[in-house]
Each structure stands twice: as structure tokens, then as C-alpha cells.
Amino acid sequence: MKDTLSRALLLMVIVFAVILVGFSDYLYASEAADAVQAAASHAAEEVHHLPPVWMVIPFAILLLMIATGPLFYHHFWEHHYPKVAVGLGAVVAVFYGFFMDHGTHTLLHTLEEYISFIALIGSLFIVSGGILIKIGTRGRPLVNGGLLFFGSILADVIGTTGASMLLIRPYMRINEGRLKPFHIVFFIFLVSNIGGGLTPIGDPPLFLGFLKGVPFFWILKEVWHIWLITVLVLIGIFMIFDTMAGKGTVPKDFESHLGKPLEIQGSRSFIFLAVIIVSVFMDPAVIPGFPSLQEMLHVPFGIREVIMFAVAVAAFKTADEEAMEGNEFNFEPIKEVAFLFIGIFATMIPALELIGAYAESHATDFSVSRFYWLTGSLSGVLDNAPTYLNFLAGSMGKFGSDIGSVEAVRSFADGIPSPVSFDVPSDIYLLAISVAAVFFGTMTYIGNAPNFMVKNIAEQADVDVPGFVEYVYKYSLPILVPVFAVIWYVFFNY
Image 1 (cartoon, rainbow, N blue to C red):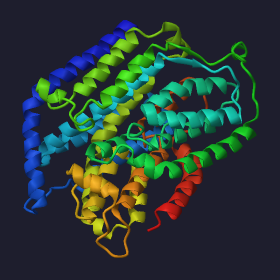
Image 2 (tube, helix red, strand yellow; image 1 turned 180 degrees about the vertical axis):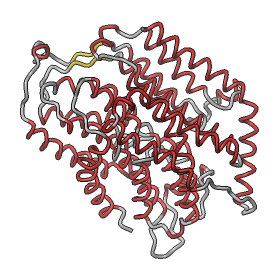
Image 3 (spheres, one colour; image 1 turned 90 degrees about the vertical axis):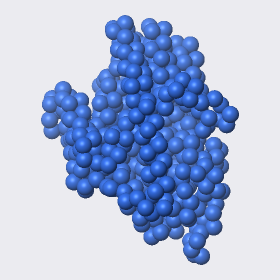
Image 4 (cartoon, rainbow, N blue to C red; image 1 turned 60 degrees about the horizontal axis):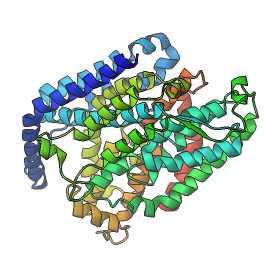
């Protein structure tokens, strides 16, 4: 199986490289056209053609089927969800390719984003699969709460995907015999989402903000108290649930590990994990003075992604066999994410364009409260990274600033006085958008990629995991919304 899968991954890298070379001239031309279009837009000489509202229907259908498929037509969904996701995405792709101005460039840009997305989460998934962590204690409220807090911090160091993939299996293992749906849900709340809210490494929206010019430690300095309060409150709620769950039964195969110190098998995979994290920063936009590998190799995009795919192949071929078996590693979780999110990335293009245009045209009427709730609610059902960028651009437009200027973004983060005497400075807007984009990504399984991966891994371990709708009405709405409402009232009620 290893040889087959590694060849498949290697083939993906080769095909990806060929695509980049083949489209490099076109992409450069598209970028030039983009620059001209942006300049014309700022001069109010270019009319932006938006997609019709009905083009949001494929996204709505996909979202509805993700929610209802596992419940009402499980057999069909299990066998045909790749066709559904790709088919609905193809509807939007065909419309943009043939009927939209600059539609082909939009599709290629979305493809770039998807490849970056799948390269990062795929490589982290594969590398973490070769690391087996054995904790020699039984899961109980204090232990689980400590592990969730540690995972929340770890998410800021290796990202929510890396932390989720590294800890979900040992977390389930120490709680085997007493695992309830809420165990998985709170893991998703904290480790897969909110935990990554302190650094640009933690969650994609913050990293995009960093690339645009938000200082690296700005979010840590501004949000640490909100982050800490939210994490501690949710862990406190979790521990009440966990206390009520009782001790459960200890599996016989786990008894032999009780009392033993922490054991890590496959530790050499941490080297690959470090390479992936370092590759994220191999960009002159991140490290001033760092050579542009794209320019050196005459390709507009993809060096970082090729490195990640190559690391994934190397990590898989050299992984510790016992660690992989202990983790019951297989490719089903990443396969589900890859297919569903290619459909999500494609079908959400019209929705994001319509939302972005609305935010830009109505920015002057938007208060901090509206930016917080709109960014948050849409981040729960759309990719939170482009949602963050759209509303950041809108809020900067309110202050007469341009998201395309690094200096303007830095000034925006420092705090530009409001043009309206009774309004708040710009950094409050940026903070509200940043918190909402990261925190609200936990509202649904599609709010952030690790959510789906954790769900799939838990299901393969025969854990009782709530469905899409149950996750929302039983956990997100009654637990998260009140917490997020208090955050709004205390910090962003302007």
C-alpha cells in the first residue's frame, strides 16, 4: 500500500509542476491584467461585473447535502460524495470559464489557493500519522482539560491542522471506553479552531493578514486576553460535561500502559514537521530579503507547495511502521477533505465575490459590531481565510486605506483615527475581524478543514460523532453563540 500511495502522491507533484509550467506565461499575463484592473478600479474607470445571485445555488446545494447526506441517504453519500462535490464545482467553473469577465483568471487563482490548502493540510496529516504518542494515564476531567489547553497552545506553533492530527488519536486513546460525542466536539472547538487564534501560524486568515502587512506579534499582543478567557471558559464547560460522563470502562489493552511515562514513537517525523513549518515562511513577503524562489525558477507559484508534497512523500516512505499501525493511519480523512473542499472552493466563488462587493460598497455603514457578526457568521459556512480578506478590505476602505499596500495595512493595525468623530480607531475593526474569522470557524464542520478530518478519524474509530445538523443545534448554537455574544458585548459593542 505504501508504494502505491507514495507513487500517487509523487504523481500529484509531477502533474502539479507540469500545470504550473504550462500556465506560467498565462498566469503572468493574468497578473498583469489584474494590476491594470485594480488601478482602473481605484480610478473608478472600471465596472466590476458580478456573478448573478442564482450562481450561489450550487454552494447551497453542496452545503445542504453535506448536512443531510450522512443522515438520510448515507449509502449514496458515502459512495458518491466525490462526484457530487466535483460536479457542483464544475457547474460554477464552466460558468466562470465561459461567461464571466476574467473568469479564467479567477478559477486559476482559486486553484492556486486550493493547492496551497491541500498541500499544507495533506502534508501535516501524513507527517503526523507517523508520530505515535502514548500517554500513560487515564482520561479524566483534569487530564483532558490540560490536554485541550496544551493542544490550544500547540495550535499556535504548528497550526490547527498539525495540532489536531498530532493529538486527536492519543486523546481518543486515553478516553477509550468513556468517549462521548462532546469529547470530539470540544476538541474541534479548541484545538482545531480557537486555539490557533494567537499567531499567524495558527490559522490561515491570520497568516494571510500577516502576508498583507499585519505585524507577526500584533495578534498575540491584542487578542491574548480574549483568547485566554474563551479557552478557559470552554475548558470549564467541557470539564463539567466530562465529570458527568463518569469513569467508563478501561480497555484491557490500555491497562498495560497505565502509570508509564509519556512515550513518543516515530519521533524522526518531527524533522519533517519542522520542514513544513519552515517552508511556510520561505517567502520574501514573510522574511524581508529572502530570495524569491518563484523568480529564480521562473514560475509564478508553487515552490512551497512542491516542497510540502515532497516532504509528505518522504515522510510516508520513511515513517515508523509501528507508529503508523498504532495510529491506524489511512488516507480516508484527507481524501474526504480533498474532494469536499475542492467543491467548496469552487462553489463559494460567486458567494465570496457578492459578499466582498457588498462589504466594500457598504463599508461606511458598517459598525464594528456588524463586521464582527458578518465575518463570524460567514466564516462558519465559507472558507474563513477569503472571508477575512474581504471584510478586512471593506473595513480598510471605510478608513480610506488600501489592502494592497503593506504600509497601509501596518498603519491600519497601529490604529488610524476614525474619519467619524464618534467611531473607534481602525485597529478595533481589525481585531474584531481577526477574532471572528478564527473563532467562528468552529461553528460547523466546514468552517475549518481540521474539523472534517477530526470527525472522520473519530468515525473510523467507531466513536459516536454528531452529524452536521446535530453538531450545530446541539453544541455550536447553545454553547458557542452565547460565549461569542459575550465577547462581542465586552470587546466589540460599537
